[in-house]
Image 1 (cartoon, rainbow, N blue to C red):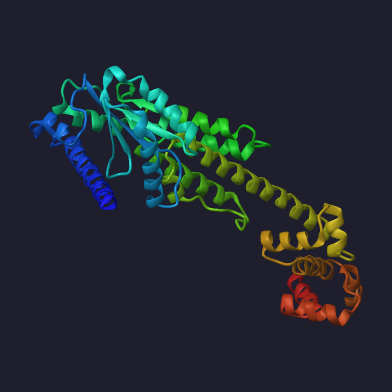
Image 2: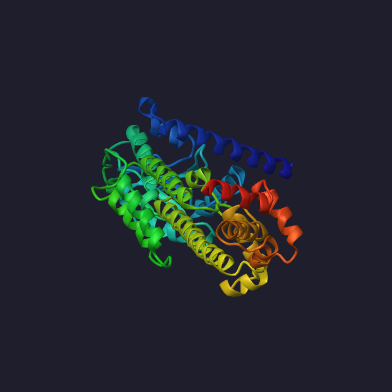
Length: 392
């Protein structure tokens, strides 16, 4: 019998909790001001009905969760933890979005600070708290609720783990055009600097320029940032010979970021990686240029090993650089240089064919003749004859 009574009590408490949440969410909706006898209904639900300038605060987790179920479970744990700490003068509930709501008297607002610290010390994830303006009566409390929601959006600028009061929010400014000149300046900076120590500051300065006249809607910052990333990417790709090591930025990752600080950090990391690729690309160009110069000077005895030694890289790495930057292998490049030199010797000297072959690095004159015909379309002798006829 005692067990049955306990089961009934648990069931009654569960039903009462559901009724409270349902009623409170109805109260905080835009239709809440049409409700009558609010105090009576709160008393019926065994909730405090007497408030001095009632106000709403909303608590949400600040951090990433694998899914909404885990996020809600985390908030339910915080709710259970807070329940005995808030006192009888306030009402606590969990809304349909998984945020914890607090209805309390404005004269008790100081307890929000201690509540925030308690949550931070007890749980692994920090929380954001948005606080609306106090109302004169409960019938207009939905205004405070909506204001608390708007205050939470300000975490985009203020950062995670903050208490944000709606009364302290700034008005948003409008921006007439995208600062294409600042995009260009940022790219030129990344392109020209020797190291990445100043990249973070450069990104910060870009957004400081955007916000020089005041804060703007966060939706515009997301839109502007995507446009910035696309612009920087296009500029970089137009100058890079090899893009095999380049990782494109992720729009979805960007849109999931909750704060401007996160966005600036993401862009800074992206630009550091872009700087490394562009620097490596420049270094590759220098290595390839020097290598081709050596091949032209020493085509008779040039080898991949000897060339790699001269430009201070390993033979396999040099081989890959040739392929990535020129589309040709070392042997193909060496053959091009040798054939070009052979054509010059056949045209301007009286050296015999086998002497030309030896001069450009081929000890077997037959093999030289085969390679020459394959590349030029005629044999060395036929080439010399054609050139001679043209001179006449």
